[in-house]
Image (cartoon, rainbow, N blue to C red; front, side):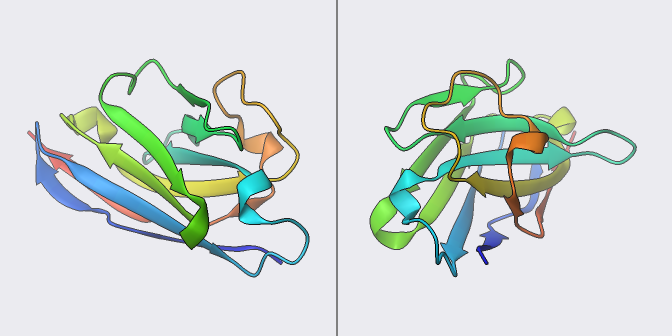
Length: 129
């Protein structure tokens, strides 16, 4: 089974930056480079929402809330996904999860959780005003 472990969360002030990472391991069915990878977030009392996704060709999509501030990237050699978060706002406060699926070849929309089978346990991001 695929295992995902996030890291890099923390507490920052408005306008600050954080870089999240997600390491994939235990892939016995597909190599990392064929996976579509995504970041989701969930705030207390809210539904888990897609933040950004990147497919095997490096195409990326972002939610309107983070576009222009966040950048998703992947390092296939290290089986690692990253999310660079700049100009953070209090509304970015949430638990951030990475997710993976080998079933999406080309990302064409904001990622939806029902398409992703493998999930990490999350890393907390807190942005204070």
